[in-house]
Length: 207
Image 1 (cartoon, rainbow, N blue to C red):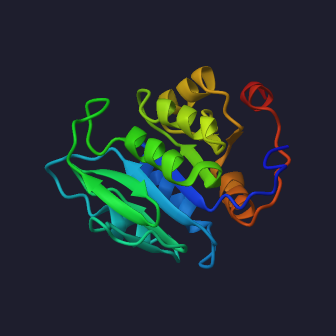
Image 2: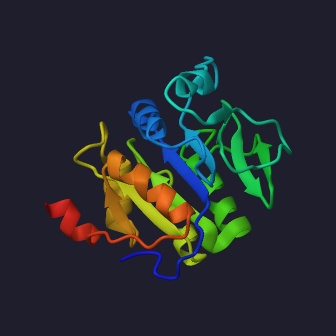
């Protein structure tokens, strides 16, 4: 059982790399238009080639998907995607963009988003790590947990590339390992302050 405190976990931060477009598109297609959460995502992207990520994701979701400007309000009911070659970080109520040093050899990187969300929003944060290579996002998930938030990873057996979810399961005491179909419903419930009855991560990974 998670979120036994019935906290409204309405700041959702998501990181992905290889295989992430497919995972994000499917996940967002399952979210209702009135989801009571603000969502920020980082997908590893080329710093040179324009991928038109917001328009790609917008085809599958009823939510507003934007590449925010620096200082834009961070509002419920929208998805904020990190622009290419810029870190996306959260402050209280606003989105900030930064061309700070690359992390894990990439910009945008997942860890800056997760760390900043933990600092700004604490226990309201849900950190989600989807398909991808490497370990970007794992230290950030640990920071989210330290701040009282929750960490969830995509079931490695479902992910197109399982490295990032598997590393998080190995290195972090994640709260849940979920398939995308279950994750969408879980995020809505958490945003509404509901408890979730989930199997321990070890049990799900072995099933």
